[in-house]
Image (cartoon, rainbow, N blue to C red):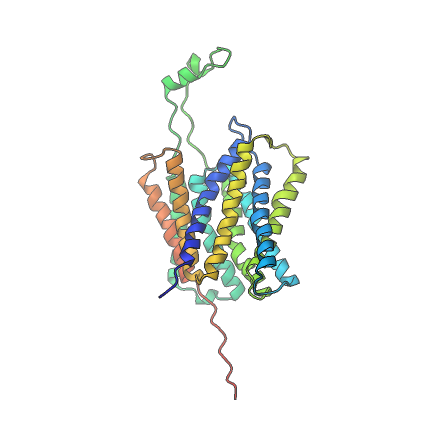
Length: 354
């Protein structure tokens, strides 16, 4: 009978990664000090500390107590550290996208749709398998592109301000009427999609897409070890998402402060979901899961978790256009097609021994 234990870790991963964006968004707003401000560096520091705890301390304990196959190597450390670096820069891209006004509702599905394509293209580049790609593979990329455009176009938009409600709420604390209370009421403008939100999403998709192939290279250089490369990832996160931002806090102005425990908790929880999700991938492979179906399941269900969490917590029932769900389904379908139909390097033929 086939062992399906790996599915427990697959579910754990897509639940964690599906919650990552919405939880980080709350932490960023809370640490920003209110009034619509979002902190940039402080949430990233909390994410880095969570990665340090889960991706450095935990592997050290397991390696010391139980051990693992494989061995340390300089090349393995470098490749794995670089993987962690691109992962941390990808996390920065998410923070930037939210800072510029992006919402988890569409930012995360776009990342989850584009990252598998980058992952596959980087793998094909490293394996030199572009000539083996089928037309269905490129169709999958096209479907993701069309679906991504649909997600952006059909994303939920803010409702216009109700004139009566605005009139009631438009009085300052000292009783002075605001412009709205004196007749200057105007509907809220529709949420725009500035180009820098797109650049931030692209940065994350590029980095998180390259993360897998680079980390795989690090694993190979460490003789198949999984926890040693993961430890290197945690160290990279600590350097890029903790040390560097803490140094920058003394130079750059960043709204908010670390006095808000709720903001710290939400941001740390976001980092924990990211790190636990990455650990879930490792254990899914350890229990017999294969990338051929593990990664499509993760990248297919994570945006679904993200979307329905946002609908439930923001009370958006009935306010999301049907075309948004259709576009989201296209993004997921295209990403799964790219992952499943990606050309794979054929093993070298065995040499006969006389």
